Length: 278
Image 1 (cartoon, rainbow, N blue to C red):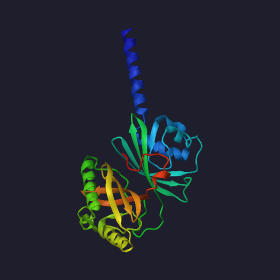
Image 2: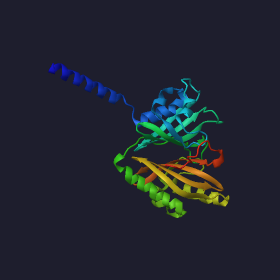
Image 3: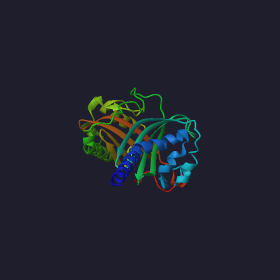
Image 4: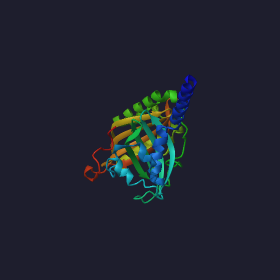
């Protein structure tokens, strides 16, 4: 009898281990969530919180919003996951969508999801149309993708925090301290590579009467060498949400991607969560 009980305990333990191994990670759940806009798979609804909050102004809160999208029928949209990293309960994804309904061409996005008790409780995004030409020769999405230097996560986050304080102060002559000189790789299509590319663009925009203003850093996310800053500001007279992704190497910024999205008037929103509540 004792042997039978021990055997049963061992079997139950193996089953529990197997079930634990089959549990999806946060990154896997986040990818499945976004991928469902392509596949239409309703399986993802199992790990969406009933009261999920949306920070995309076109989407109402609640799980039922996503039930309308996920019907087990492919949408015709194609999604490419370019970079994925994680900071505690947040998963950050750098994505490209093709043939997404409502857009005239491919879009580049940052999608962020927050987990609570294993379920997706909030979703943020910043969206821009893909641009086919750039003065730096780089696209909005190419470049390094491998996460490394995990032990330096907090130090790298501090590098970006200091850099963003310079940008908030408007003392642009000080940015060279944080950027790896002319080796700096730029993925914003209107800015050339190198520190000089950044400074020249700022001056050019000023002569055109367009001031780039950073008002507040709302959040900085990081995993290893990748750091994303979420910033509220303006381009000219347009309130703007800035998502700036940096790659850090040896304590300096060596590569930069961004998405700028004009903030719509609040009366047009389908929810009251705002773009910057983290």
